[in-house]
Length: 382
Ligand code: GLA
Image 1: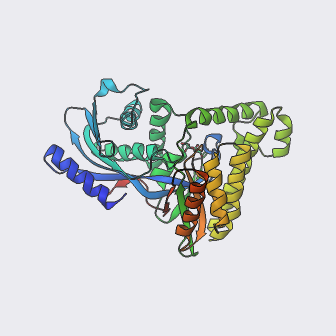
Image 2 (image 1 turned 120 degrees about the horizontal axis):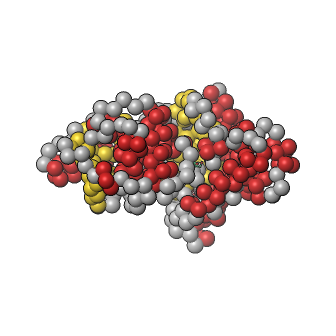
Image 3 (image 1 turned 120 degrees about the vertical axis):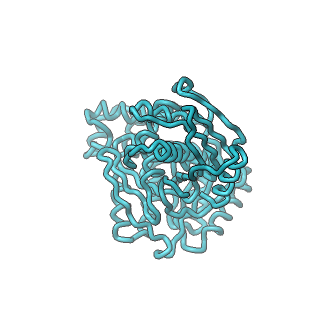
């Protein structure tokens, strides 16, 4: 969250309602360091929260209705209990869906006025929607005086995403936005829900994590994401395991599957889980530089086996590596969006400039970039 966003939501709230809000809350976007498409296979992930966040000024209201204004969209939507119908369209569905999920869980949610602003890039694979859900949840839990454990909050936010908005995602993004802490990546077991905050001491290691947005629109993401998920579930069924996390002998599993495409999907998920476990072990030992080959291998696996990268993303990764990045991979659901690159401190701008030059020569639009800094999860900030 930026202090400009805090000022913006405070002043917009005050000019709209003629008084100060009760408080200000924020929830971050995330990058995933490693562990892609493993969450819905009951596997392991390791995201960290970004400084970029959804910031919300809010106050309870007495009539049991909700209003939400987005300063980014310059739009206000109002809704009451009867309007909470799954399948609602528009950005405000992420807000209405959180109200719906809380009520479905038997929680009493007070009406509220929300004014929000976000500096999480949208459609870039950085979980702008999870940030909106988790920020809304933090607001409504506090204003309604609901005691909800952080993991439970993440699950409620995911319920909004899955059942109200209708996107069949796993739990990673909402867990990251809720559970991450400053200076750490979150090692998260998506079956047991065990968490471990692993120290991500980039500065001490003389490293930076470049986040580069290829700005490729996520054209196929919804249908292709759902197709990958179906393929994994079908493979697990054919292999007689509860989820692909339970595949212990990869060669035997591959031999048991008739379809080469399904074999590739399984190989990605199983090897990616192993890479997350290795990455967590390296971070526990503060061996951050050793993450680099794991990032590279993860990218190759997403490109060749899971087939979720696109030419701009592959070119960005190759160019970043050629320009000196130690390791690089696409981050997020795929089909566009951001790459992350582990680079020596002070070199991120020059690596990003090399990608921009290559994109220009290839006729692609200009990418944008920033440094990923492990930041705090959702909560009240004022
Ligand atoms: C999206 C989903 C997550 C996860 C990633 C891929 O971000 O929301 O649940 O599946 O894709 O790792």
